[in-house]
Image 1 (tube, rainbow, N blue to C red):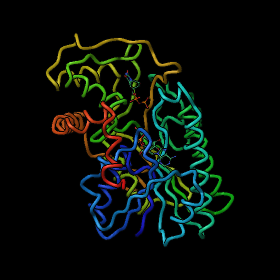
Image 2 (image 1 turned 180 degrees about the vertical axis):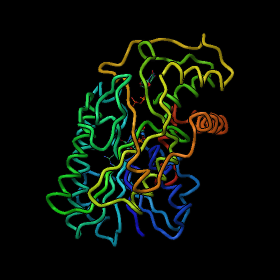
Image 3 (image 1 turned 90 degrees about the vertical axis):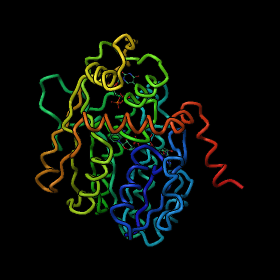
Image 4 (image 1 turned 90 degrees about the horizontal axis):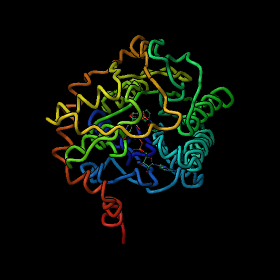
Length: 335
Ligand code: NAD
Ligand code: TYD
């Protein structure tokens, strides 16, 4: 197969490319990424010379570019590219609407114009809004109820993807997944921020009272889930993927502190995020029944592996935190 992966220089996209080439070594991947602040080609250093991999720097909103790539004997588009950080969407929504909505539409148009190319859309549990502490977990039948600009833009993109299936017969699938963590996670998100802060002997900022609940999934379990959907998923369907690892932010913080041999004096309670969703949780029974997929790694095991990775790759996250990583493209690909 020939795949167009969008956003492949980001956290999940780069893990997906590594996963895919290891498990499908005869396939060819084109990685289209704009290299925003979240895109980092160092995430793919071990892949860049693979003859079955090609990087293209560009914007998913650029129809001419996208259409050219899609028209070149493509089998599937796997769409990760997005503005992905809730806190940034609270500060400014514009890029979120542009990339997540307009960019998704541009890709859908290119898929439609080239004979209906298979399209897998990578989405989030956050489109369903938030749950009470004792409410049933989200399923594919949950109502959309996004509550921040990031989740609203992702919800809009999900609706567009489904609309192209119903209106134009585009062969689509969608996955809505819970919070990912693991290697190459940008240290503005909770788990990598806390791990790297502790490695720098800095405190960890817990929003509000720390009682918010998230369901965490190790990133390669998510990548496997997308693989299962691509291979066995039914066209037009949505699949919820989750990590079976619900935990409050404060309990997760204490777990990270304990695994890293640090005391609770390193916790700093800070002002809460506006519109902070109380709880996300995913019921992945459909993926389990129809695809035979379930997450393999426990939160404990995944956290141990993640801490070890950040410990072994201090230069990577130090360059990310200092901003130096943004020079990598110029050095590797510039004139
Ligand atoms: P990320 O922010 O780490 O990476 C996003 C990538 O997209 C970056 O490489 C960036 O350069 C690229 N990009 C942004 N705008 C672009 C544009 N206009 N054109 C081309 N490339 C562009 O994000 P992530 O955490 O890896 O998330 C990937 C996808 O998975 C997103 O669609 C996100 O909504 C979804 N998702 C994320 C999580 C999570 O916990 N991180 C959970 C569920 C779903
Ligand atoms: P985050 O990693 O931003 O993912 P999301 O908002 O998509 O769930 O945040 C995970 C949880 O951690 C969320 O409830 C907000 C909280 N959080 C903190 O308490 N402190 C932080 O510094 C960050 C970034 C997040």
